Amino acid sequence: MKKEFDTKKIESLLGQLLVEFGDDVQREGLKDTPKRATKMFAEMLVGMRYSNAEIAKLFDKTFEQSVSNDLVLVKDIECFSFCEHHIALMYDMKIAVGYIPNGRVIGLSKIARICDMVCRRLQLQERIGSDIASIMQQICKTQDVIVVIEAKHSCMSARGIQNKSAKTRTAALRGIFETDVPLRQEVYGLLKN
Image (cartoon, rainbow, N blue to C red; front, side, top):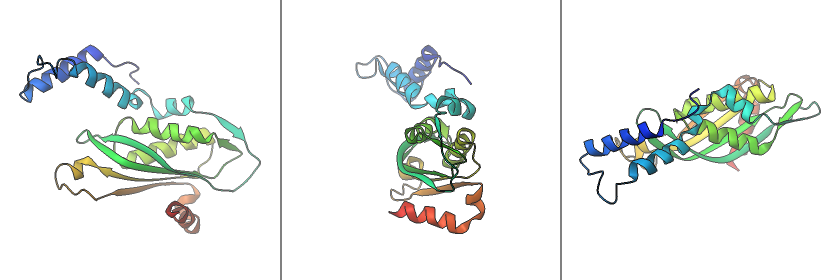
């Protein structure tokens, strides 16, 4: 993956964009906007600098766990991302990640960090769930992962149809969660509380 952004090039391109939209990049309020926006995008899209395998290495902190089939579920992880179709914000995003340990458990804060890093890319909501599930499988050495995401999309709320209340819910199901309907229903039930 590309490790560094060419900030000077991005600043220049953002300045050109502002000019094309009809503004004067030399006026006081816009003089430093390309520089500020470049810094913001570099921060908000930092996940684009890492592959799923690299994110797994960054947050690979697990602990030995006696053999157990108990469900681990972390919910209400708040994130945001940008839709790759319009570079529009996906917001009010809540992510839930569940898994069945396979002799190892991951540090709980690492789950939130994985979600955050995956979301800091140009994304599709469906791919966010898939990427998180894949990374969790790599780190925890388990096939049994579920990722449920609910979000609002500004490409629907601020433009186009302009529906302010629409939410999109997706679920990435791996391993036992694909076939064990009662277990899947248990997770969905826990998410309601």
